[in-house]
Image 1: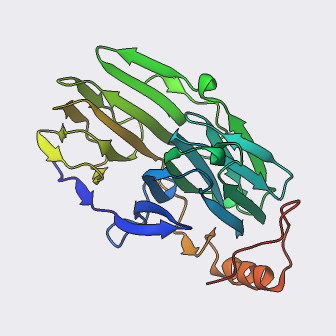
Image 2: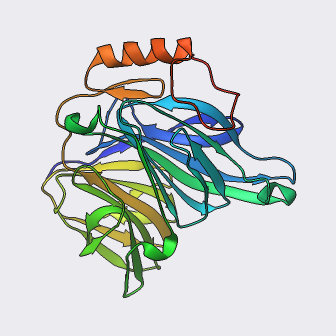
Amino acid sequence: MNTPLVIRPRAEDVEGQPILRPLPSAKCRNVGPFVFFDHMLETRYAAGDGMNIRQHPHIGLSTLTYLFEGQLQHKDSLGTNQVVKPGDVSWMTAGTAIAHVERTPEALKGQDFTMHGLQIWLASPKEHEQGPGHYSHHPAATLPVSESLGIQIRMIAGSGFCLESPVPVLSPTLYAELHLQTATTLLIPTEHEERALYVLSGEVQLNGEPVEPHDLVVLPPGEEMTLFADSDSHAVLFGGAPLDGPRRINWNFVSSDPARIDEARKRWAAGDWPKVPGESERIELP
């Protein structure tokens, strides 16, 4: 039996929102198509305050935003203007070039509120890296859920545990939210080659070994694993098929071809990029 790889995330700050970022790391660049993983930590905002991530670009990836608390307004260069609520999936595929804005909706800023959620990036397969951009919103009620013996599994994207999400993923994907009551056990199957577990809260054991909250554990391929909850616990399980080759990540750009990243940086710096309607402020190249 191989030993799982444990990654402790690094603390970051995105426009005032504290986050933990376990991927990418020096120990692991990706798990299946997942190349970037941000845990937006539970943060209390006073009335009038909130997140405001100005206009910024992407290529070669899909972003997926999933909230536990709070709301986000998503606007993009396709003309989308969507409020994302807890349990919804906000899915944006960048293709060759897309820009978007993420901020706290004005209606929510009229009161104190709590923000908590996840945002991840999935590298697009090579055949889709140069395709058109796309956005879709999937309300919480459309995501399949399984509940049995004190365990709830919600399939955020992809498939697993006999569940399939409506989110239009571009390659075999697993992204499931797990709620385990105290003293329950979940067998993690081998239906996806690459898998990782991220513990949001609670005390759990993986094959008898304790896993700390905010640890990301990369599971050995081809091995069934047993997850046991010592207390009421909350986690996500994610992964999928291996990428069809390595990916370069530079700022907000992901590509199998470094030349495309260089071109994207030049285009954004020159202002030669699709614009988000009604938005003038933007984040400049670092």
